Length: 116
Length: 114
Image (tube, rainbow over all chains, first blue to last red; front, side):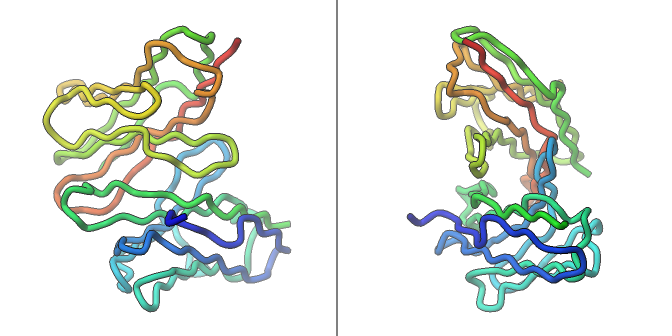
């Protein structure tokens, strides 16, 4: 399967703990996105990478959130000192800069985070 | 700034009936438009997209959508739904000026009843 993969699929943690999620994009895609989705809402943009460069980070994202894509392949999203409000589905997507793709994004299955 | 409004949070419909899921957007520049579907416990899957050209676009599973620039709408339609179409549907907009950001609507829950 050459789609977008995310690990873990589910994470339960206690408030105050740090968590890290991983995303492996489609191999030839150089753009990678992180979104957060809460119940009854659409995906909310968090941050975006083109290759290894993080080009934008949502103003809604607190300093407790950090994302990396060190070699322009997989990416990690870390949340420090988790809060109950961080409970959500975290989605990763990738796309190609090929002009024909027109920013069509391919999504992974998501990581569901529950903060107790 | 772009925004997307999905006018119905839930749409119940009987099997084999037609359905329309409404989407309006706002943007100061030209856009690409997308509809994604999310089945229970699965990731988002692209249904169809409008990039340019014909305003009527056809997607997978018998869905189609029509881009109306004057009304800034991109409504999704299917002439006859199946039980298996029960899912969450998201409309999304992306600027076609080389930008990367895609904004999603809040979603419409389609519930197909037997």
